[in-house]
Image 1: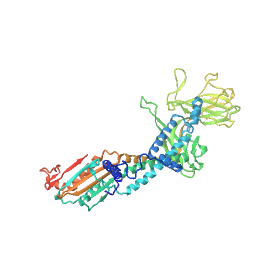
Image 2 (image 1 turned 90 degrees about the vertical axis):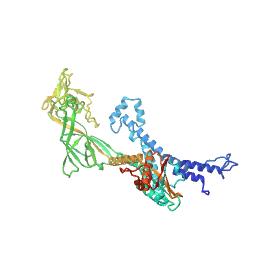
Image 3 (image 1 turned 120 degrees about the vertical axis):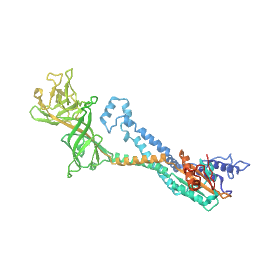
Length: 598
């Protein structure tokens, strides 16, 4: 050791975990300094100017890359991404509901434009959110790849060399094998290696034929594997989300009993494509709503009338030439068809209405979707007949599944089932504003440019119809009839090619996180030697990388294995008359002493 560099030896001992030995060797190195100047040989004088090298352009880029790919930056960006997603749930988002965003801007003329400038109504497609997303993606890749390479090299390398003073390690103990056992140091170190290997350690025996052979062992590489797996899975989740945003799509469709939906662009009521969506992605499947059933609570007094189950019976065809299949669609039980998931998100009643114009011709006929507004299915509806002559006709009203007249003489809904259905309408005539080619909301009617024919405040009164009844409009404008009732469902259709991968990577990330949290990396060294009186002296030490509250238990388990291998046969001779084994560790052939120093 005289020719070696003490500081280098100190750093090596630090790797082995013996910090106090490192300090003592550093002190030895300082003692070798020049006593006249107090500086190490070859060191610069204290008054010498320190000139720092310039980073330069490439050095600056290297420094920026190291900062970006550090684990601290990756965690900060992950937190920033979570914080950046918060406004997406606080403010309405334009892709999901542009009408709500428009109303918000109208109601908040001062703050609305400022929020819109910061893209808080388009959070997930905003430049700042995309920048965080991309930086996190790059940071994780730049962090995981070097760590994976370093870990691979560490797994292929040999365990670190045996420290000179094992007594400085956090867990330390000694054993004495009596001379009568006849176990030399070389055989003892091989026995110790076998015991460590049985506990999953990878090991290396040093100086097996020397006076003081030793074995170095370590395990727990799975901890770092779990850590790398967690971060790699996070990259996979980001890629999966990006894949869904680029090639996925979503749409909504209201389907009345007996109607059929075909998976084409014109078949959707609303459609939101991904950034790289192509109409060729749409699989030509079809869905027909045969029947929709709702089961309401009729037994409980406190929850009477509340829905218990919704079931839509569908006839589906995966392609025009394929055979029809019958499937049931329920809440939280979607139907998967053509690479899409079809969810049941709403339902209601669709009264069948026929409107005839003043010439007696049918201007409108069919089910009208009504929008429920309460638990009793009080539903608002609008009927538009732009083909009526000589004036276009429009109707606004509400549908009551079970009508009941209250104490004020007003009809209200008392039950969601259609026990006493009633249709209440107000009628209008004039220009509906549909001929200009501008799209209009089918659930609203602009009455500002229309003339009212019927209403509670007018002489003609309102229109009240039961199933099968009809009403003749004033001034010869035509008639309206209530022909029957159908049900409808609101479908939410999603296609996300990255959804399955996101689930796989999410589960993988969870498994990796569990492994990185609950597995520990440990190192063990055992050294043996022969005493002059024939005894074999054994000492062992354990060191953990990071915090490990189970290190003491591991030391106890290893000591138990060594005692069983070397001392148990002799200890059997010390059994008492009841067959109980003595725990003193003393045998008839000699004494075995076990000590443990902290």
